[in-house]
Image (cartoon, rainbow, N blue to C red; front, side, top):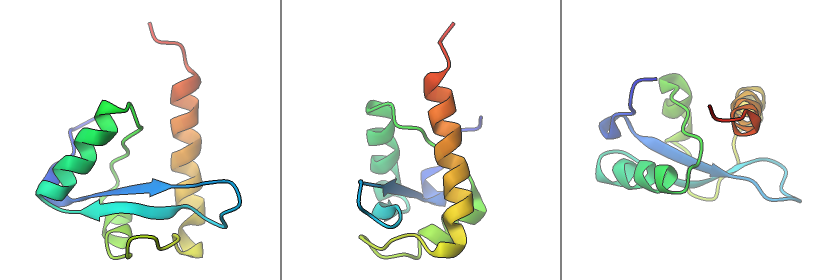
Length: 90
């Protein structure tokens, strides 16, 4: 996978039990995106590159839940991340 370019932006999503949907925990471009990506890498958080999804998510405010229209796309990303986490490293 190609590295994510910070100028393209980054969005961090989080979900806790009891929430209706994942919410935006961090978002930004440039230096802020670099910091989001660095923290994700440092904590071995799955990083998914999807420019179209990014353009929608980066417009949301911090704390906003993702729009219902994105539930399927985000669910697929989460399922993929769990699948990767479950696969043994060789």
